[in-house]
Amino acid sequence: MTSLKTKTLRFGVPKGSLQESTFALLAKAGWKITNSSRSYVPRTDDPELELRLIRAQEISRYVEHGYLDVGLTGADWIAENASDVHVITEIAYSKQTTNPARWVLAVPNDSPIKSIKDLQGKRIATELVGLTRRWLEQHSVEATVEFSWGATEVKAPELVDAIVDITETGSSLRANNLRIVDTLVASFPQLIANRQSWQDAWKRQKMETMALMLKGALAAEEKVGLKMNVARAQLDTLLRQLPALRNPTISPLAQSDWVAVETVIDERVVREIIPQLKAAGAEGIIEYPLNKVIY
Image (tube, rainbow, N blue to C red; front, side):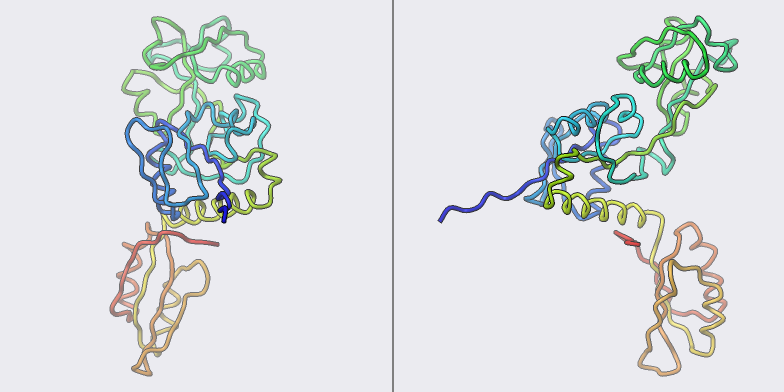
């Protein structure tokens, strides 16, 4: 008997600065990824998923033209490439922080440039040529914008008057004695689909599942689970101390005058709330990490 070929979805993973954080997010979402340092075809434990490592700058073009069914790339590169793709959802993660990546205008600390108007007649280096030119046009400023092949921070002031570069924290710019003058665009990765693939029922369902799992994994990164026991007589007092996504789960214990309480809260409030819960009568408090939170 001839076996049917497994249906597959070809997924573009951004190679470079977002690569490791994307692999970590996929793992948390439920996909185990293995990849050698020189491979552009990572392996996954999902036989229906084919991964391709491609520069974020190019992913939207490959999705648009159908080489990829789906991909993760920044809203900035979708706009730069003017790619005709379907945006499934925003996946708000980044390389180092939970902040969006920002494309900023930066100049040397001692530069006289204080605003975009001061760029008139100046020279700017950037990878984001199209968006930078459109930004200048919107402000009626004429300047020369040249493509930078990398190491953009070191080009000012010897080669150019200013740069437009991507940053999360601004630390690399400061290390190169540059200051930020303005922000052109802030960008989180977008999960995008080829329009024809999105019309395929099987592929669409697979992509929607991926979106759900990825967003669930991302939501879990800033939250933890809490379990505790409390006497029924003190339950109302404890619940007034307890923020939650929804009403917490309350379960009876073998000891009839005690209950177990379980909830999900923001990790950043745990250090303040646990002492309050203990003071409200909670015992056996357990904090545990989460892989996914599905709303």
